[in-house]
Amino acid sequence: MTRLVSGVILAAGAVAAIVWLPLVALRVIVAAIAAAAAFEYAALAGVARPASRWLVVGMAALTCWALGMPARTSVAVVTAVVLAWLAVEVLVFGHDIGRAAVAVVGAAYVGGPLGLLVAIHARSGWTVTLLLMATVVVSDTAQYYSGRSFGRRLLAPVISPKKTVEGALGGVAGAALFLALLGPRVLRGEPIVSLALLGVTMAAVGICGDLFESSLKRHAGLKDSSALIPGHGGVLDRIDALLFATPMFYLYLRDLP
Image (cartoon, rainbow, N blue to C red; front, side, top):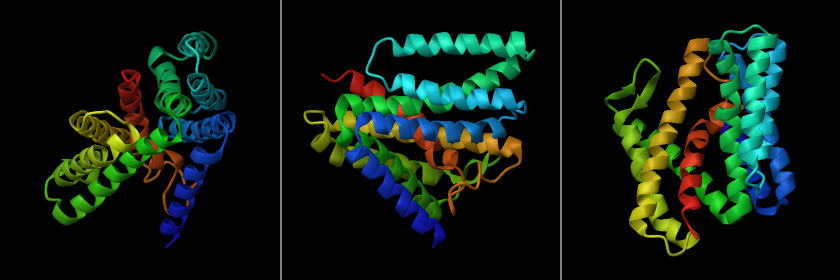
């Protein structure tokens, strides 16, 4: 019951924010979500030094904010800041390249996709943004029920013992069908086949995102990224698939008039 209630509250809050909040307020909220997710990432990735951990948090939020700006300079800003951050990690903190990269990756992993989510809202409006998020939810739900009903072969037994091939196929099919049916009503004029292929791609990379976060948790010896959300774990546990699926959706929109 706790999981259901918190899930409903999260979903209602997300929809309300996307539909009714002005863009600047949405950017603030999403940047805060990026900061919370980055804090969890830093713990999972073993970023032990407090200064480095808070840099991960700050840089993820900054990356999210910058990429959410409808300006061509945002990528240049992010690139310049990330290079400066690498220099600080190596030259000031004395980390080797591998440890420095682990910290810097947090900005790209968390802040980048969430910034693109805001950019999608700024460019195409709340209906398109909700279409993106709903596709990920449909895929996750289809994976769960397909795996529970038909799951036999494990997809990645070492990383995620509960995820099955049948569940993954169900998630891919669910996302493809959902976008093929609802996509033309939101992205008018788009061919059904193209939207179905977009659904396949988003579901596939979303599964990769889920497995990527599961791998982080396995290496850290943790079940959840945190206990922030009752019944659901942490922020990363809720958005792992969305982080990987959002860039694919954004790239698709870039080719539209």
